[in-house]
Length: 440
Image 1 (cartoon, one colour):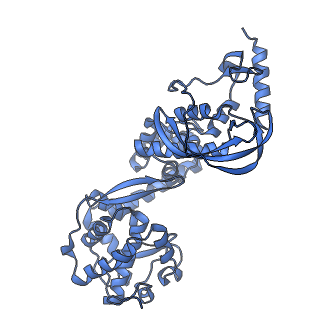
Image 2 (spheres, one colour):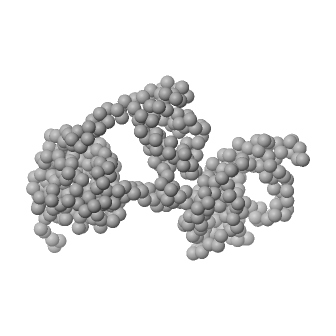
Image 3 (cartoon, one colour):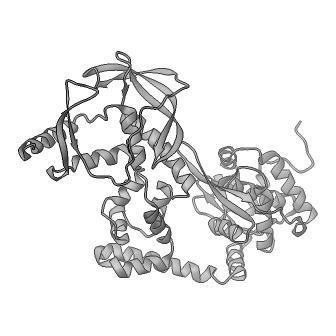
């Protein structure tokens, strides 16, 4: 049996070396392993640096792939790990130059090129195909592990896995935590988790279904109150006070909104007082049907919908001196949005007007509203229908980004500051052409 002092010496040398260079040798095998474990490279390295002699399994043995080297098997047991598959065939390869880096096969610094590939990763045992950028040694042709590139590939695969399994994305987990005014360590302690668990999840490693369900439950104030009673002693007085303050704010908002449609409509109407509703009575029915009308177009992202609603209300005000919905609008980073927009979106979903779906890209995620029924156009006047069609036809085909950029040039946005309500008087300089006119 290997003497304990040899294991201690090996771990000491490994950790000392890893501070300078830490390579995953045989790139695809290790990438598949991390995918099966749902683990990002940084998480794996952190765990490697935390190994102790108690984690020793066996070794040293001769390396099958590099006979001149030894292999030590030391690690944390992963009960959900599956047998590692062989390397998969890749295709659609192309190349681009990159700076010199260390090649573990050549055992020296070498020039590498970057190849674009379609690769399949077995994320928690489910095959996910993603775009990957891979560093290849120009001397020996061996794939080289580069943290930045492999982290990008795993992040894409994990985002798609979460989308398929309806799990929270890292930014959604962070949003839930920030709602209660806590850092990662404090929120993990409140949930009864290990101190670094939430940090790993927000950094990209995959959460399990049980932790995902706990995080979703932590969105609700009553569940946070229960957690505070059970684990509040783990927080500092300042952290606990922050949570209590956020709970008070949530209770105050709920008192305003939980009275049903009538109370919610009154809240919206109060925000529109003083002319901020476009001199039209607030109509929750028209708000819902406006959302249904625009959501009938495919790819109706929430940001895009907010801009279309803004242009419809402000164009009708410019042409007829009243808005359509009676909503107030506010200055937001991506352009004007209806006040209480998240609540309006939730109301449309709860009223079976739309279904909310999450869409993900390589480095983004957003929500899309899909109409569950046709809009009831009977609630609108002829002039309102004319304006809705006049907005939907030219602007509906634009992307969310293009509409945001367009709205940033409007006086409604340039003459107001962050969070400020937008006066309908700004509609006089709206960039949309007058109804009935045509380009010269």
